[in-house]
Amino acid sequence: MTKDIAESPQLRFDPSGAAYVLDPARPVLAHGRDLAAGAHVAPHAHPRGQLLWAAEGLLRLSAGEGVWLVPPGFGIWIPGGTRHEMRVVSRPGTGARTRNLYVDPSFPLRPGAQGGAQGCEVLPVAPLLREVILRMVEETDPARLARLGAVALDEIAAARPAPLDLPAGHDKRLRRLTAHLGRNPADPRPLPVLAAEVGASPRTLARLFRAETGLSFRDWRVRVRLLAAVGRLERGESSTTIAHSLGWRSPSAFVAAFRSHFGSPPQSWLRGR
Image 1 (spheres, rainbow, N blue to C red):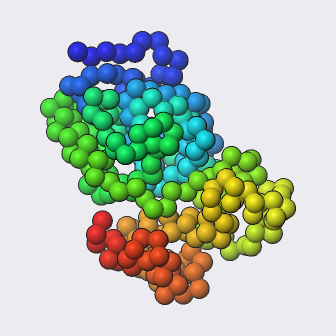
Image 2 (tube, rainbow, N blue to C red; image 1 turned 135 degrees about the vertical axis):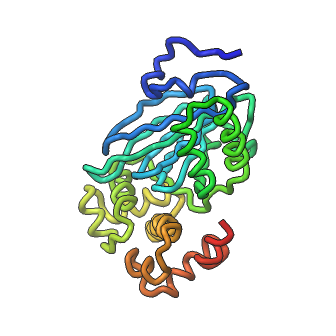
């Protein structure tokens, strides 16, 4: 039996109401939404688990003590009941296209990731899952939605978390810098120059990076560039083009960084995807 959670103050953040419908007969519901740069979805929670996919644009999601950047082509799994908020941090004039899958709690997914905010995981959205999401957002036939939903459940359950979870931090100065680098990963300027732009000393920012992201500034910048590189690889760009456009000294330096984080060189990793 379908149960709609009536008069939830959060329904305005999901105009379709899909996140609040409890119905095991409809295990996966879909909803798409285009948002302007700077758009803010205030803190809320819903019973269904959510795969929030950034089809276009850069998103920042906060849940509990965790903050994650979600680049284009990636998604974030948010366990049901997790209080979270989201902001579009794409550059002005670009906005974001978000596509969402909401999974009924009778179908527990990613059990290793359960546990409130700490259960959020950044996931690469593989081509099959991407096409399923796009089809589900447009589909109206219940039988076809059910078949597509079964594929989506399998894909979400099998997805391996990106080894590049990119914490954005809580400090306002740090957030301004991480958002800027998320939008402009090739920015080559050193920390002292960037620190001046956000109103902090290089020493303060270096400390904030380690304290709030668990990474040094250098390692964080490598990660954001690798996230950008994954999207470009999937669009068919070569390692040479990616290396030069994202600030590596040479293609071999890019390949070495990629192998260090992913365990295989770019093209081998892509084939494995």
